[in-house]
Image (spheres, rainbow, N blue to C red):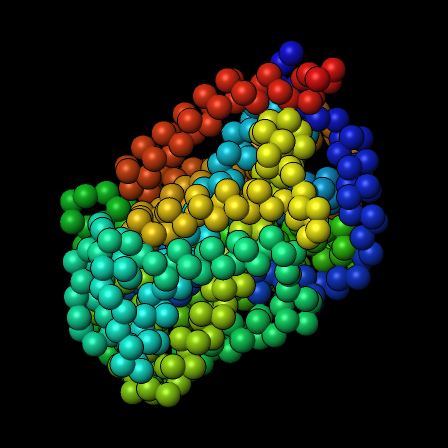
Length: 483
């Protein structure tokens, strides 16, 4: 029994053919770019941009987006190669199982909880902020004790300041509703997804175009605020810390790599889809952040989970601001749905491998969904959404995602060494330089995140290691085929 035993590529490919039933190659390069743009534009842009500006980078948060995009580009190319080799559910968890062995697969699967589950919690908190802003416009004011966590200060659109409540009930309600929806097997159709992509892009462009005329150049002085003497608080280290924070805004890009087996021409479509969507979104992100920090002084975004609404309010387009908020709420809802669904798929796959109890792999007799997993994460995500401040959640999601990207980049180096002749419909270019660059950039962004994020990551990973050696190692189907 070895914790480094890898899952044979032949077994993974058999699983892929059984579970996916030979997906048709129907996606063009343009479709892949649209898929990437739709997956990337979401909560990170509309929620964490203001916090990154207020706490780390100031107006230079635009440079933070560029730095984060560079790290994503390197990791994305590595994702694309794996997706073309191993078209099976499980994302980076499955890739690691084939390259670095069971223990590393467990580590990355456990780490993905930080990306998907806490990502959904982060979006839930920001969703509730925009909902409160919308209700406030119509004179509807909810009980302040039930609209924010005990450890955060909330400023409403009318200037009301709430210094800690009991629980963020709206965030819990949206997470619970979507979890129950997933149990019934409801999922977005391709047409609805395309509509949401268009809506998201229109919202961003509308914000940029209409807000540009109201920019106050004084809000850009200084563009890179002087460092306070503390690492990550402005200056160049603040730009890096800001990149680590807004990295959350890019985590949807791996949706392109998971569609490799459906691309008409993976060799051409994968790099165009990944890099094309990243370039388009980075340009939109930079312009969006530039306008946002030009409309309102960056320090006013401290702890604000609805910075787009706060900034757009100074333009005077009150009717359009309401439309903006409604569109953001719709976009957030789809993002949460995808994150909660992704989390359930990862835990379902890990359960089928024996690394988690069969509880997580149970399928509902009527709806044919992993309903117990959905219920478990409904409670888990709701607790974080209800009681943890959005900035802390964002940092935890970013550091977890960055760690996953580091392991995927490292996996390409291992796979090229162990299986140089394995079929690949897409190859990461300039190996080993691209994977190494991806590892270094992502590690640098992890280093730039607050010390508390590392402590939380260490505690979370320590818990994961304990669970592996107490339960998973002894129940692994790969290491215990007779069980």
